[in-house]
Length: 520
Image (cartoon, rainbow, N blue to C red; front, side, top):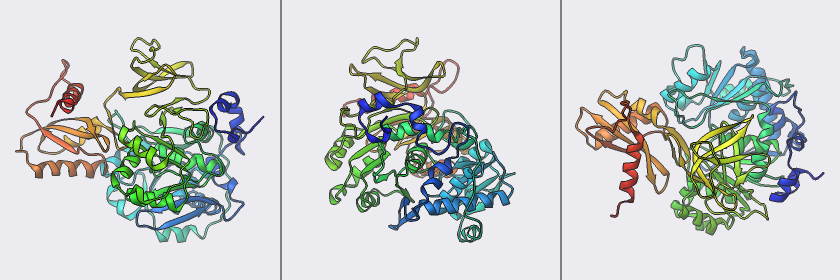
């Protein structure tokens, strides 16, 4: 039987794919498996083999080998055990991609603890919500994040730096993992939630096996690729598809560390000779709007995007700049990737703007409110068949006559802006903490660069002006995250309400949509 990595073709995948074949990629089995062993240690025999290329925002380039990651993650595992961190306890990691980030990520999983990556731009409220949910034994963060992580009872807060690396350097570089496949390995927070308190999606060590369908057919990773994913490893795309999946396949992955700059990204893509790029839709938009893409020669052969639909202008930019089709990859942190465009497949025509077709062995439908399967062209909710039932995604979509899926908007109050998923409820709750805000409602409104931006409608006892607007924006950003704040604020006398007295966000969204479509 041929190896699943031998071909990217659609017909090949439909004929030969099976989960039994995927298990052949790994050293572990259905009983005993460890993500750190599979992603790092088993590729470390060649001391010079590069695991991660880091493009730092300040212009530095850094290479980390599989051997380095294996050695330092073992040291970190020993260090955790010496500090009393036990099996199943959580280790929260609030660091930019770096040697210490990867040492902590894989070291925690190596010793049976649970790694919890956290976004480095979270403010105090954003960190507090997640710490209260996962209750980590240890929180590791950078010096510039210390102000966001004070007063956590039961959590040891450790500042990463040279002293910690020097302490780790004294510890052994060998550690034998002994986790079971079903042991918890990762808590992954989505970048937003419709709930007041975010709940982590819990991943076992077996997750590394089930990432392979997305790796093979969503990002199209194959041995020999020069891969890059600029998404933060604090989120699902950057962690699962930009870090774990390529490393498990022994493929060098590249990523971005620090404040994002589109020109710096493009320079890295050129200098690293990247052939396979997977990014959020907003990364491509920012490359387009930078106006500098024509200055670079690229080597891209496969290209994918995720996080949100992509606009026509950016699709045209991708086609002109990279000369390969933009392949959407659709899924959620909870259910994984389910719709793909098979990057690199010679027999799979990519329809611009489509979500593609299901990964092999997965059943996806668009269904009406009554549960029936929608006919081609009819809009309904995208649902996934799993464990004997249909799981709703809370996304609307349609299927065309050829079986391609298309996104048709969100089915709830989650806002997707520049690839970030944000909660209207969470932002409203922070605004309502301001002493001059009496009522607040938040919705997503169309934006040419970010797809959507957050707009807040505020009732206040204070006279509105530009200074008050900036004050509310800063108030929210400092408490949640640097990207999670209302870019537009409208001061109103009243808010539309439902018969039950709840704020009617749909009425606000409809009014904004009508205003946006009105002739100028």
